[in-house]
Length: 209
Image (cartoon, rainbow, N blue to C red; front, top):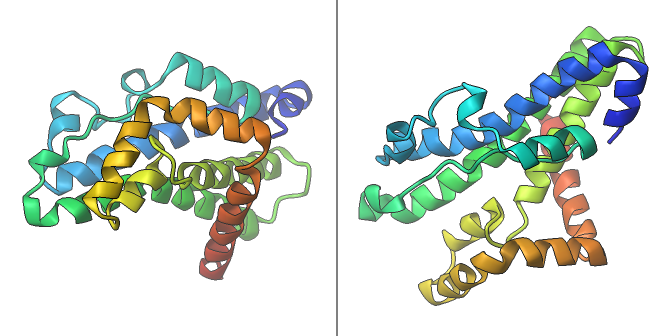
């Protein structure tokens, strides 16, 4: 993702980008909790997770991965859909799950919008920071849309599929990380991620004047 190269060539730009990326994964998780809270589940609020305080959100391994390879995560915000009124529970599952992806898309939109608005010199600090911020947030959004548990895409899918199918996905969740990792190593998920990235870029492009 160019992060190590940026660190070596422009440490100040790397620090600026690092802070923005940390808050990208924080806002991803915060969005889940905030939407759940708005729909009736106060679990995240009770546990002190509806905050921008990074100490409450950052996962050491996820943070290190984000800084080293440009892809990482924060501690998942706990959500209890049973606290959402039953008639809105499926809608809640979809909206809560989509909130994190939406947060990353919004960050990417503003980064690209500022890039176009300011028009910094290619290769300048501002250009590199905004470009990488947008690129990594688009990747984070696309990756999380993969419909394999525990990724957000699987939860969005569950909002539309029968309970019998959802039970199968729930049973896969404890092994989901290894399934995703294996498919990534085999290259099976690469075209899926690329497709999602292309769709996200197309949507953002339509919104930028």
